[in-house]
Length: 344
Ligand SMILES: Cc1ncc(C[n+]2csc(CCOP(=O)(O)OP(=O)(O)O)c2C)c(N)n1
Ligand SMILES: [Mg+2]
Image 1 (spheres, helix red, strand yellow):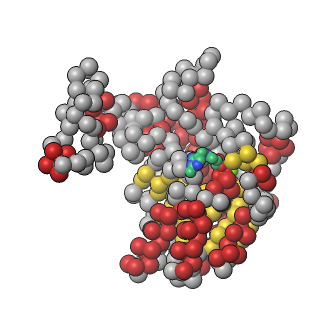
Image 2 (cartoon, protein in one colour):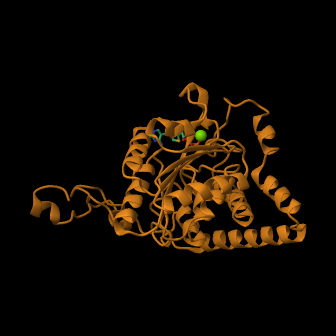
Image 3 (tube, rainbow, N blue to C red):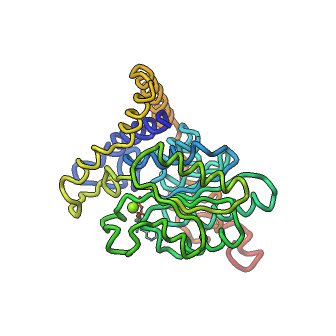
């Protein structure tokens, strides 16, 4: 868990450097080697490490728009994930998804920029496991800002009605972009949402990997044993802005400084030292993590960019015949549209 957490933290520090390249002095979101938005999860690592420690490759995980720590803990291939974030052809989604839309069928991981979107597919994966008679489970991660979304609430209902092997994990960082939690819902403890569905709801009050590990052991164990779903809420902290480039004018000035004193990585290191793990071992884990991250970033930067024509591959609908091509001509529409009398 410690190794995963330091990997995730260092990974994002390195992404941050790469992301800023070419975007200054006037912030241009489309410039640089990582175009588009970037949501970083420094301060969230304990929830992913503590939960995913109980998961296997055949278990399914869905994550939201702040996905890197979850993907790393689920075992997503770091090189192909990084190539995806850099928009390269060898990325997990051929460079078309970017950082919010990572998809890795080898370890059953997906994420989405639409908040609470991961809940229905996780319920679907859990239903599939139940129908197939396997003991695989599914876990949906979401932010506390998503707990009033219909997709989440409907997913809780289906999961409990069918006693599905699924765990919902709310990462409560107290903010949804610039909106403090108390302004959008009166529920202080998101795990209470479970009460309305007669489902177990558990909250881990501290940003503490071991406490998450213990709570998740029960929740995942319950799901795997065929005893139905659990809703778990974990207190995490957002050390960064909502996304890179967020000026955070809405945030109390010393909040981040205070939260950093509760850093979950420092806390786990202290716990490990108290259990007799020496500093050299922790340093070795950190060095190993940093080398792995540096290699993945180097790999990604060497990868080819997709050809513009590839934008028309792997899509549900082909472009209309009049779509301008990049060379100034037009792109031929697939014949299927004519044969069926409508768009494919
Ligand atoms: C359905 C939907 N509505 C609105 C948005 C815009 N949006 C992106 S992130 C976000 C807030 C998310 O807050 P939270 O769920 O707490 O996650 P956090 O960013 O704090 O990790 C919103 C409203 C969206 N992506 N999807
Ligand atoms: Mg939040």
